[in-house]
Amino acid sequence: MIIQALRDERIILTRNHRLPQARGIKIILIRAEKLKAQLAEVSRALEIQPDPQMMFSRCILCNERLVEIAKEKVKDKVPEYVFKTQKDFITCPKCKRIYWQGTHWGNVAHTLKEICSS
Image (cartoon, rainbow, N blue to C red; front, side, top):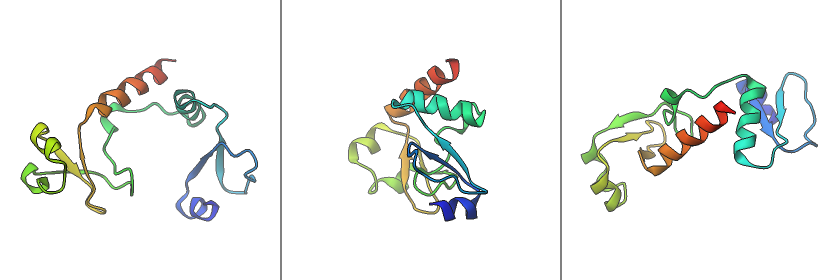
């Protein structure tokens, strides 16, 4: 983890207070126990505000930018109910994972709005 953080110039977010402070690596120790408080803590520490336009724009597995994919191309790759009830799909060009706008999109947007206003 530390080697990858150095190589990729990443920031390590952790609750592990025993993780040694290594030179050249930014480590943010998260003290909060609940998710919303953790997100607020990271937002303050990094001085960032979530951008709603950027939500769900990258793959959660490989961080690649997601691209639109035609509905007919995902027919046999998503659950039947999802195919029937959704019209727009996006995919990761690297790992081929498929995404669609489920109820969690609104839930995440609401949570981020709460965090940013606190």
